[in-house]
Image (cartoon, rainbow, N blue to C red; front, top):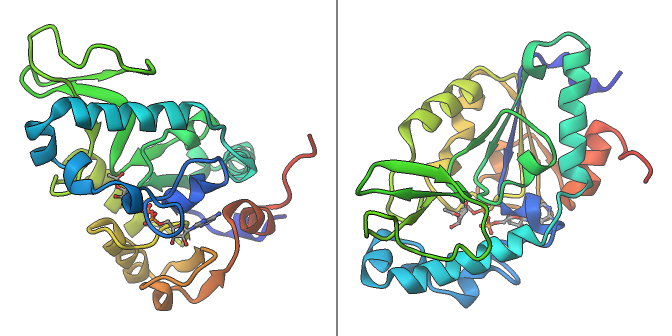
Length: 242
Ligand code: OAD
């Protein structure tokens, strides 16, 4: 039996490093998006109000890049792990994925529930009409809603508050978990970077998967220094042969 089966409630907390091996660029570090683009020009409400077309062109590129990528073995291992726990009789598998990623890769690998802390590239909204819609068109095409206002990606940009409903569910899941596994996040963005504290307060076991140390590494008694796919294979069992 996988050793992780002993934990009743598990949270996988993922960041851009989780999607790196799928080919989705991270934000920081080598090849990071914020080395090439200033977030002040493309990922905040002020930029959107100044130049919605430039902001949309940037997000259209992100959508095209994510659509061209596939979930990797690490995503599939998490999905398979959830299914194995469900088969063992744990309601919902007792596993929650909390992701800062907006690329939808966990869902494409068939995992649920996935709480998206920073929203999704695949949802758009019209703030004037208080409407949120799923949309997977690449490119989006028209950037304006039928009401005439510019549509907006349903993403938590710099300076935006997190969605309260999502945050409530996330804090509940993390506060009640017995094992918290962080995968591929630099812990540079708040309040996401503070969330592991809820697991620590609950006395959960904590594991950090990241090839590099992070500013919060000392909060984790166990570190797995390597890429997500290999470290998840070590933790959850090897991937199925193709
Ligand atoms: P970052 O780009 O800040 O950090 C990526 C992390 O992944 C780094 O710590 C890397 O060491 C690690 N990493 C790289 N390759 C890896 C691999 N193969 N396996 C595992 N880890 C690997 O990404 P986030 O921490 O997710 O906001 O960034 C947080 C937020 O900042 C993002 O959600 C985004 C950004 O602005 C929004 O999209 C709204």
